[in-house]
Image (cartoon, rainbow, N blue to C red):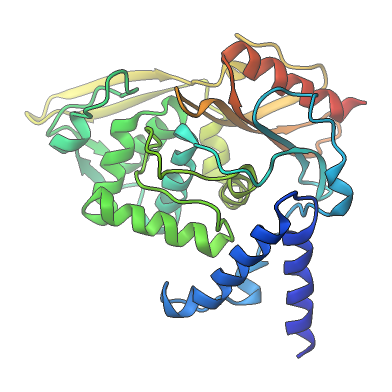
Length: 321
């Protein structure tokens, strides 16, 4: 009984603190707890919900300067000391663009075998969205799941994302169900995915704090941290005729390429970018200071690339103040 009361207090601390829409957040989580057994087919336990140490927003986290950044949502969390240094609109529903691929990657780590060989389908090689970022794989190409994961996170290839989804679940639709189930298990109850890549759909959305929950889970995997630290990646695969192919993909993270300068005493470990016309420019990062304290920072819906990195660097200044 004592543990149950403790769980209730912890949930209330998460839901009611530092959020202008705290009542909405509370009822969303309450509905989730009620439906987790009947609708989703699993029981929510305290151990599952609080399995990882999290940065919790409380009542003292509501007084940040919203004018520090003009982007729609942002945060800076000290994950070493479990402290929020900044948060703007952490629970507002927004489009995640390619930050969606974080959940796709998480499903790979939880359910996939990186040594699997994946045959690229017609769907994966023919994405009907003009300007969609693709790795250029062709129908029938044989690519390892590990290479697809690198292409997904380093280069943000949408074709890699669909290939992963179809390989692990048989179809992208079935894979999306897994994505949403996993989001619910992590407590990301204000998230709804409709695809594996983040190309725009009005019903495909998340929040800044939900993205933190997903990213926090990924940081438990050393391979994930290794991948997001790469400036580039070379994939070696076979085409449908058995010919060896090789392509090199450059990271979309301009901090890692050196195109954007990093604040002194800050080291960028890695992260994930996102961009669509509706989502704007997005970026989530893992970074550390000179004392090896680690941080997660996020910007959602910046107006352009320059503003994205300028405002992200403004967040870094809060670390060294």
